[in-house]
Image (cartoon, rainbow, N blue to C red; front, side, top):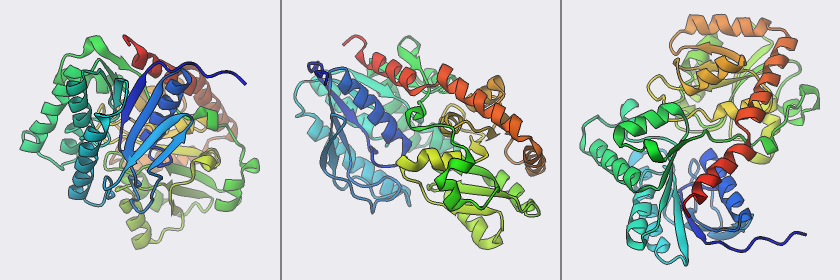
Length: 411
């Protein structure tokens, strides 16, 4: 058994969501934290004690995972059913992180992301008072997101306050990590950060993914009937990832009894799916909750094609993380999105799927019927090209390593 490296210093990580919460941001933060521990750092995490999507789920207040010291804070997550409750939870989390973060011994760096938007305030206060550098990992961008989704008006007091916060943390951060070139461009418009911005997407969990044939897939055997052709959307259903165009097309395709549309996950946007099922009672659309992480390779592999959605107004504001998991299990992509965007670049450059715009239900139906007629050999070739792109450009080992290199720069 190898001897662990000597501790090099303490990294303080501030977030709302963290494993085992199923939200992807928590898993990515843990991947990075665990790698930093392997490199000899002590990592202390302050996160919420309840689930982000389901606040009835409680997590241990103190635990150690893969060497990462996790401290979870009470009264810091009340679910996503209303904006006031989300804001209250974020504020209480921020205040507790400020106080607790001031007393962590030997902190030499702070990592903070954008969930919730108040976490960067805690990072700023701790950084100012303890004179420690910040690595700012931008997973989504506000107030841009809430403005584009019509939740806040541009130029309003909340929007100006959030932009003020953006400029403060972008100026204070030693390094900024943006998920794609479109996000980097939006950040640059807020403040000149070109000299300290690294652009890298979040990684798939390809060490937990593999191409599993339908015949060898126990999850598919339990959840999908026979040789049904499955179009799957898996993950968070948000306002920024609308699926209505494909839902409407699916309603028109109930004549094809060998095709099913399976929507897995949760989130505020899942209501559209569930309402469609309740009102229309379609024979070819089903809804399932989030699946456990340990069975994710099987649920994702149960699809024949994966649906990925990017809202028309959120290019560079949110990042289409779902595409990587689908690619990692070797499945083609049906992209519902504007063009250009990060996901359309991937689909086009690697020839791994189809692209349809939002609102074009006729076009969506036409493409879906084309997909249905695509030979198994061609679908397999698309999936193999998708996996090759993951190995070449988007592997966990490569991207997580790059992120940790950025954290360690100028230490």
